[in-house]
Length: 278
Image 1 (tube, one colour):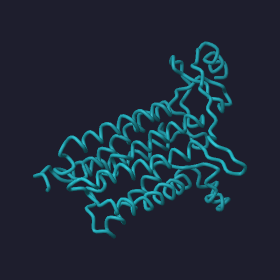
Image 2 (tube, rainbow, N blue to C red; image 1 turned 90 degrees about the horizontal axis):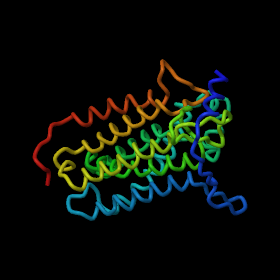
Image 3 (spheres, rainbow, N blue to C red; image 1 turned 180 degrees about the vertical axis):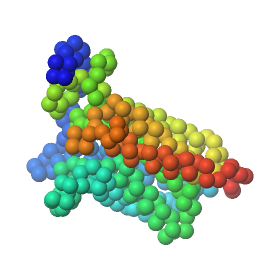
């Protein structure tokens, strides 16, 4: 096995990895990282975009609702993302050191956990404000892929969550890889599939079709379907978490994506198209 890996390293001409400092600004103890900015930018863009939608006739919520929901979204993304990582990816570590759950600066966030957090935030917010859950969900779903895109770009800048060893012409050697092997830049695959491509698709359907009025909840279901499929496919070329490995040939990310696909099917088939709502 060692000889095979060494041969792969020797014979593959990898693209140079564009090393970018993960820290954008460092002023004394104050450190601002690209990863933190990705979360912030995704949340602020979502707030700005949905607020624009809220000013149009038939919007699912008012501009004031959008302002109020931003706080709920932050709690859902950060709280859910952290708890999801703790429960899904490294529970024994945090059981041994419970206070480590609060050390967000050490890293460790789960998209699936953040998604569950946002789902709960949307449900509770809509109930509290007597809003249509499915219409609000469609609006929120249209902007979610931008956060995914920015997050994956931040993963790439951090040189983390890289792909499996490969001999494709665009393979890269990531500086943190102890084996120094040419690997799939799987972060960029995810940025394109679950990020940019899904963003264009959902925004086009929301803004240029009457699907959101004729079939509320379908666009949200399409988001779950698109992300689940993209994650499921990319995980075949992404290096599994070292402390988890594969389970029955699939990664933890793939395992968590299967319920998303089932949920997506339910959302997209729960009702048949009817007359456009006013």
